[in-house]
Image (tube, rainbow, N blue to C red; front, top):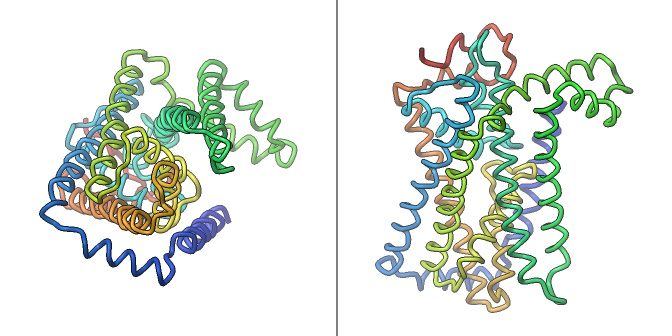
Length: 356
């Protein structure tokens, strides 16, 4: 039922965002003109710069996971770490409702040593810290450009993103200090325990395993290194968007590029459409509208082509590298198939995904 709800929400998101960004007849003519005016010889250096920065982004995003796994005693060879991360990134993009988030944790579980729930805890820490970095920047960027004519959605979105990720960070801190009390507080005040004691006990058991993946928060060295890798990751991410935007003739500031990157990141944390189709373009254009005059038909057309290209490059990059990783000796398709569930008691779960 939960899976059906998630997939339904993701398909509704796909329909809504595709409807919102789909150009009308006159816009399609301007878009064709913008594409015809694009000269590859002039565009190629920007594309090369974007891809180079995308490579830095990919590496940092994958490599920093080491610093979340190390406090749990998990050791992955560099090649296997990159292979598992790359396949996981492909799954996040390809699967609806963010179901791909479960692939990486499931691939490193090892019975009696590392539960998939604990591994998922490291992904939760990763997402919360990412969300906090992004929401802080988005809040600052939007707060700086607020005026009486700003869109009604702008500051509520900024406050909501900051509030949600700040609350999640508080939960991490309390869960690490008082795991039993924090989990019981959540199940009691969310009324889950009132509805069903059995379900509440099961959820508490899962949450306690999840909390064991928060160990990095006690390891100052690894936490600082993870945070520094994250800053490089988001820095390269924002710069890659800025470079590509200028390749399409968009006079987007660096602050605007980072704000756009942040709003895209916030937007795709919602139930995502398959492949982020429509959703990615919608939030890209929504953010660009704060920094560019999209009332100008020429700029609007170039912005639309840019949003489609930005998304298309991401899809080709992550699906391509993910497929290539599956052909390597460091991970197999059978492992990915067996990792479809986070249930550590599955008979067909990999006995060991961590090289000794």
